[in-house]
Image (cartoon, rainbow, N blue to C red; front, side, top):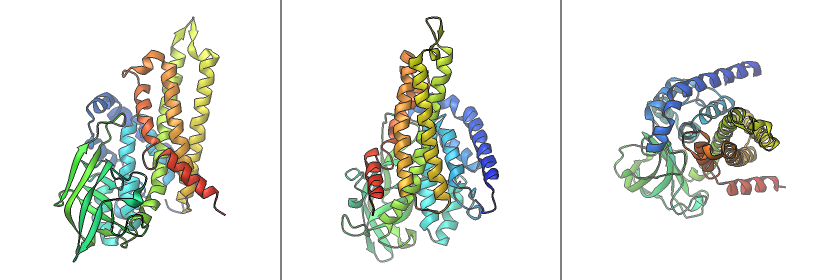
Length: 385
């Protein structure tokens, strides 16, 4: 966002984004949710359309084909998508805040010019490879290794749980270049689909977020030119932590959207469902559940937009993004669970939306740092002298 944009103008932009995304999702996503979920179908054409709407490069300046917006607008878009189908919100977020944003934050001018217009337009899909089968949260001990050979790097190893991995045209790969555990022993690379030695493996059969692709990336003597390196050798892990600060705001927004969608569905159902001659919302047990759900959603939303505002101001958000991500993730699970309870037996059936919100919500407490990791980050930050 430009420094000349007033708070009122930003509010109007956010309102327009919310209305545009809500309308688009209602027309193009909602009718297909069940099919995509059942078949684990990644709806790639939806992401092409999101690119045409300007949602695939929201945080990237206009000079590179992006929308030139801030995190407040970005969070608004994710929430609006997640209220309808969290799977689409998740893949859009991973493309924006992880892959595309990593290239923008740490890429050379030549790399930005080459890759960002393709990504921000939605012509290309992006993925981001950090997590490995045996490391998970212990990313500092990754086993994927890059060894310098002349003007190239030879990469061997694998990554797993990679969002958009199979359909992505370009992946930002973080690979170890030094000793295990060395915070300055990793580097990041841009790897294009079709690079010899780079293939995709198993596509995971998941509990939730099933329309969002989650796959394994395999590297066997994969040669990557040094010109594809992002930033300095040794900075890969440090770059990742900075990228994740913003990524956690994405997942916080995803949690808010899930919780909001589940709450709104439960609220509407509670007014329609009659028992003992009156709507179930007239019973205090249900009314109090709704009150708790609403309060939790509002709190998570405020925490998320607070972290987004700080990010837009260029301030350090390690603490705030972790607080927002932790609270919103746990809220999503709790609110979705209560929504199922309010729906009763119908909440357990796929014909109604809360069953899917319930399954989808759990990913928020795991992806981009588990809730336990968030508590580690939060406690470390608040205990600093």
